[in-house]
Length: 86
Image (cartoon, rainbow, N blue to C red; front, side, top):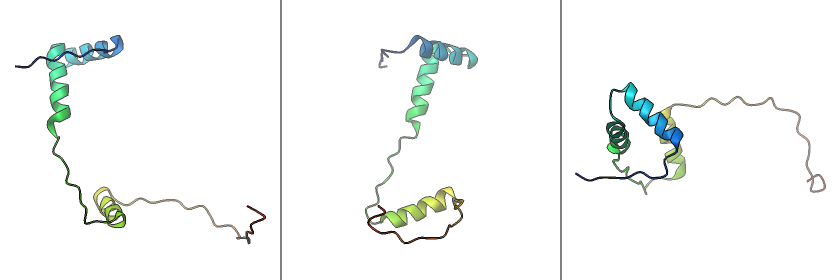
């Protein structure tokens, strides 16, 4: 078994770890191990798609996470803009 040392952990974070361990009925070491293993459990690399452009990627994102409804502000009368206005 390998050993690991965690340095520069603040007292507040150490206390939170102690409380979380107690709430879960584990030692601080067991709780830290559980947190570490949970953090690396889903580390499957996602393939990079080179055959897709940004528009298609955006569309896939929308299909995966759902549509976004944006509230548009009411249009006002447009005026002609000249370079002097800018």
